[in-house]
Length: 413
Image (cartoon, rainbow, N blue to C red):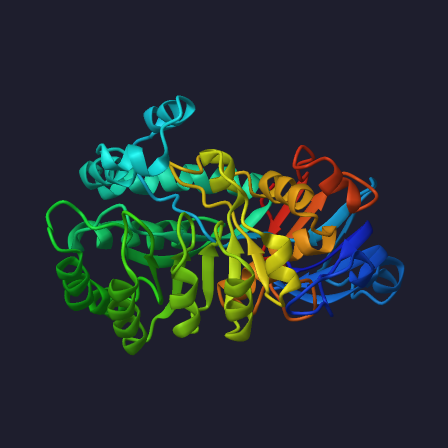
């Protein structure tokens, strides 16, 4: 029987993401970097971390494995994509073509495209089809170094179809190496079956949210506050009931118009996501209420709009996570590292701030305390890049891909 204990190394550098400030600015000099490092993994967890020679000298060889690396490698925590919509059927390349002619996201939606186009295709798809497509997207993410990923519902918009999506997410989570964290997003937009959005919100509150909790399909609830989606009043009713049912809450906020961030602050949501139109006032309010800002550069790239003001959010004392928003409409790329690197150069983020945004801050946005950094007792979710200096990963702006990925100590790439 194979032992589950192994020593990996030496790595030219290990970035632990330990001992960093939880909010506000982070300097590269604050990063803990272990040179010639090693890591001991046991039963999927980090047992020890330190200088490879010292670990090897005292490593118990009986029934254990030493995996010695003979190349320059930089090891970081597994990447965490804390906002995606990757459970869906169909595509929206027609929407993209229309945007290239100058049509806006909201104009396309008003003509029957946008989210409702994906809703129509997702409703038609059997559970097995959603399961198959979601697995394929998880395969792609794992190869990119993403070891944990949030996935939202929101393309069903009926009780039956929202539950179908959440069951697909749960099924893939149980089968795939990638960890999936499900978020219930029935409040994505109001479907045409309901003339009054408040009637739809009440329907989801009474019929869907209790059932999702009963079946343990998700403990997170989200709502989209914006033009063409839901109002502050709708959000207050939805979030109040979601919190009463025991959900952690998050808000799609300030993408095209202001208001969502104030709602997130008033409910002390775990995170406010998007924030492209947020300003100084919104940043201060969110920071005061300990709401994490999740910025989504993939959406800005897909729509051709400004990035969220990540630099300002950080400088006003916020914790900022960076996620891909991978979805079939506004953010079809799904390359988290590349998007984070591009955001960093435009928003003048330090490498430490970029890396924190896709590891430890993303873990906090998902309330996952067992990942996002490398220290004893945390999950052995590890990603190794073929370079000798961590700065090269970001200098290459996502073109440098990981050569090794371990999920809970098991090599998956």
